[in-house]
Image 1 (tube, rainbow, N blue to C red):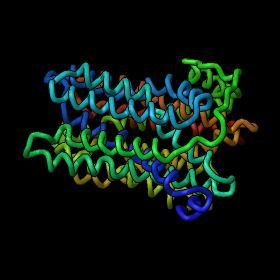
Image 2: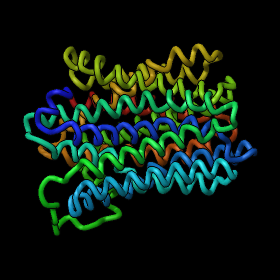
Image 3: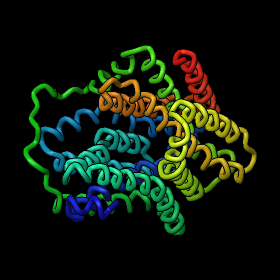
Image 4: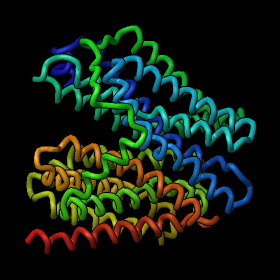
Length: 405
């Protein structure tokens, strides 16, 4: 894959873009165990609410800001907006680190807000990879970027756990991963600034105005037909369920099994392995054998059962055993439902994919805020909530079968 992509464009331009995608994914994955392992309040109820706010404000800010940054990158060029997003990423983790050190929940939440407002890094880097070189190697370049994202999602939590263990004796365990991430991000941005050159003049499209409500307006496509409306609701419930599990499984493991902060980090890394298995092996194999509908329905059923089993589990070994089936099932279902949505796109696949991105960000934000309230000091609540939502999504998809026949 690298050889195919490199034939069309020099590695000194490909690699910093891939590293930028890697750093973005690594930071997104590692922040959950860090926030879960470092309470922002000694009051259990207030801690649940603050954790939900700290986690949820990031995707909600992304929901509103990402379309603006995409339009700005068309007008001003990819590089300046990527550098802006990179600076936002560094500022975000710096504020979180300082917030932990001085005991300020406000700074931590502000850091998450800044990160969310500048969180178009991965999308812009993938767009830049698409811009480079000829059409014949475009898929190889984009796949290289997606592989970088998957690796970041796996290695981010693992690196966080290793650094937390190393820094534990020096009481540096809370911020060591954040400091390392800032250093890697700064080096990546310097490399990118020195090597990347925008191709051609930026697009100055007058009918693409800056629109803070762009993601909201995109959602209109989700109700363009009864089938799209049903599928979009299935996808929304599915993502609400996954957000509830992904963002709160760390607090669940700490609360029920007294798992260490680096143990939680390694657990999140195992979830990332499930994603890689899904995209690399399971999904391609299933899609060769079955259409998208049975793949989506079957994987959602499996995921519902596994999340329910995790909620009632009594041993930490049981939770480790379920990690890969849950993340693999979620990833398979995600891809299959998106395939069902694009099948209904009627030539507007790009618009439908934009809708799924908006739904994903909105769902992650809403489920995080709601999960913090639902937890109420009891970390199993959001996991049960995730199982109920996944079951509802599965039932709704089952109902679509009658409509399709």
